[in-house]
Length: 308
Length: 308
Image (cartoon, rainbow over all chains, first blue to last red; front, side, top):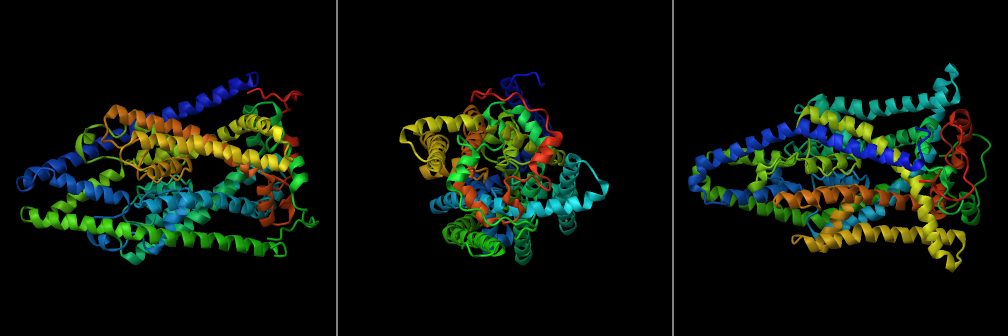
């Protein structure tokens, strides 16, 4: 592989990704095609049975119209069934969770804006809030990562490993810690608390939230058919989980991305031109930019104690 | 602000973000509460009217059961209405779009796995695919960013701006370019092609996709009620748009994040401890790690020509 020209390496990388996309699609079709067809058949049978039994008293299209209204309402978070239809969709916990799902780009979609004003607000909120969130995460990273690394390093010191191995071990340990604390344990708790999902389902929900994929087919907080207090507690718990868990996830990802092994892999695929310099910062070298505009550096601390 | 201790700065930053979350939630409640309540009322009225007119021939609960089935099906992408109910949910374009929505963490949610195998596959696919995608983006960034910067710098050279101003101008120009090419133009095209959404709606859809929020309430590709060929073309167009647009978005974000002004802001909020060193790389300095494990550097190119 080392003898390949850079453009060939890129080509390979891109082709590999497109293949991965195609294979993923094929696997999903194989796994999900049949269950979806079964659900479709079940639905069609239910509709047909309904029409057969009661169709005589229903004018044509009346049922379809009702179904259409109910489905459209659900797409925006308005439930048709039972007591849930009396509570407001946009109560405070729901609105907070929705705002958080925008700022974290999770975007569950179990609720969505109906009005033009709401859609415009969501765009503006995301356009302003996302960069701010990224800046916050960057600042927190600078504060927390060194402390975290020091902690893990202190734990692994007795083993006297070479720096690179130690770094790898630290990253793996951190990854396992984050996975246990923020995926495994919450999933176990969810599974225990909710009667209606398997452990796999609970893991799936937690993973979907923390990866910010946020499919929204099920929410860890439960559905609106639960007693309102429990439902709202669930939403607030999900909110806290999302914010803390994502931060932990980002710190873990950052730790991995700074591993020499990972950097070497990325470098391997990158061009061997001017970008060889780490974080060149665009056209101008980082140093030129820093010298020309950065505010005077704070007094360097000789002790390795972060002040945050 | 400069006189505040670091922990106070952090506190301020965090409080500001929590406030932003709360204010966002309050604004959304004000904007969306009434429309959602109206939709709820409309739905309840439709249900009541239906029951009143035809309830005589329907046993209690029959309608609710049917609605429940239809709603559950929709949550997984199975449509109840019209001809759409005959086509498979997991045809190849749909499966490709779903796989892409996982790898880009957009997660529209208009389709979701039903089976345990499908859920497990999604988790594994994301767990493996997301890091790979991040690595791909990192590699592409190293290749494309310098070229992009050189291009923009060439355009702005006649104005002979100071380095920092030039960098800012370049970033803004790139941001506007990406916004026009990947949000404004596609939204205009969508608005022209589709009869059923306003320009704001089209902008909202494009923005939701590119920010990876992916609420999924509407998909730019249209709904299954369209002729299948058009629907599938729409999905494939969305797929291409998502992949290219996200790459462009990431390059733009990267360019902004490397601006000295942005770096200075992040530094301001970060601790003044050991993290002052750029990209310290965890416990060990970047140099130690690099020296101990990095593969021999490729022959440095004296010409500024990237080989990718």
